[in-house]
Image (tube, rainbow over the protein chains, first blue to last red):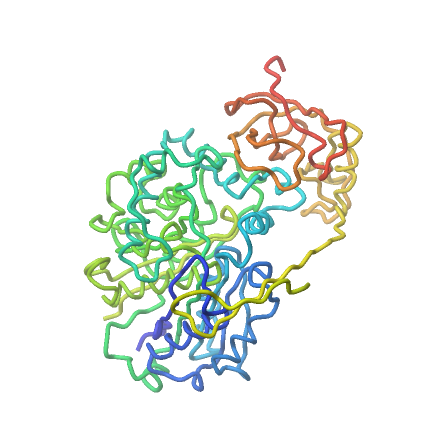
Length: 399
Length: 157
């Protein structure tokens, strides 16, 4: 019997621009109920809830955890809300994993969501997102959050000769893959030229290099194998997926405070990945990992992630993006869900949705249109701000 | 907080959902705290920061306490010159106004302190890494005090 937590249930709503028929609690309940059905289990046997959301500003509520907890039948059990910017969902999963590994719980339901779509108008959304930067030292200078990402990518271009058409490939790939994902916010058939002629936000980034703000929810049930045998009627009927590794790390939140030698990189992502890989026994990420969902808040951030996650040599992310190795037919398909660029991002749900894509792929359940055949080891990668908190999770098909 | 409209959602697939339009205005009183002398200095054309009185370590942005010695730091003036680490052109308007888009944004390593600032570099160009710049002070009151300074390229420095 494995000592690692198993992912027994997964559920999510489609990510959309504006969900009008359901409020955030409706969506989280839908996702949580799906996850419990998928596991063939009832919340009566769940030991703990972990609520995942980022922004009181977007969701217009300060204490949604107990509301969701109540709506899915967990009142009375321990509950914690996790917030870590863009890494929120991934950190929620890590919190649940820790509770199980510590023996404090045998089964934990992680549920989260966000109404990043059009709960507020675009100008207000931009204003709220600008609060992710340092309000006293950065926000007065940032026209949008594209600015700090653009500074990092400008440095990447200077250091390694990376070009905008190279990271435009990521924008094209992820929107193309989103066409095959019924949960995706907006798949598109676009060309590199379309990306390179869209409106400039902060050089080198243009409109089509940026990801989507979505409404959506996602949930995952984690439990011990012993609990699965007792309480999950679907356990054993399909490939089992272990939550093999979790790693997180932090960096200076302000770009200006960081070591100038590594300005082109997410240094904390490297550390988070190293920790997660070590825990999961991965020694050569390039050859061992079969599939990954990475944090493509901007197209170039995916290119940086290839390098910082050890998927290619440092500085070669741009050429690797073009050579196809991260496409569906490539050696390490990345963001087959469509990523944040195509599936979209509802922050509290994003890291959970990434895990759902990886688990679905490892089980062979995502459907032929975007299946990566034979995938056995997958990872997810998210970060807050421009990499202030980075979180990497590893999932392995057990049998 | 007030509700300004209440309307049924107009969508073919929906039956019962209705939607409320809220308005909420938030007025905050925000202190700049222990960094206040820095922001006050900008109004008088001075760039200043702090150093530890024991280990002499320097900080930017200014810190009240040395993280190593946990002692109160002391303020000193910076020359206002620096070197561009990276810069780019930004096309969106900044939230507190003070300048028009597009503008040039850079990370500038400041002389006289082990630290850097992310700030505006005047002009239409995008200076290369290594370009020398100097602080220039803006006379007019700004919505945010950080905007009382900007940087300009000083090739002769």
